[in-house]
Image (tube, rainbow, N blue to C red):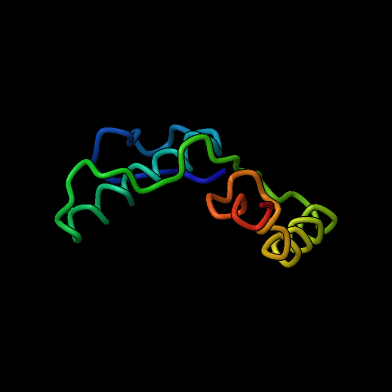
Length: 90
C-alpha cells in the first residue's frame, strides 16, 4: 500500500494508510492548488465536474479504454454534449 506524506490539509501521519480514492483526491487537491499558484488563479476550478474515473486493474480493461480513446473523437459530431453538433443536424 502507498503511504502519503507531506504538508497540507489532506495529509496523514506516516504509517497510516489511505484508500486509493482518498489518495487520488489528495493528489488532485494538492496539484490543483499548485497549478493555481503558478498561474496566479487562486480558487479556480481545474478539473471537470462529475468526471468519471476508473482504476485500470487488468489488460482487458486497459485495452477497452484504449479503444474508447481511439474511437471517441470520431463520435464528437453526434455527441449531445457538443455545443456545435446542432448546426450539423439542421
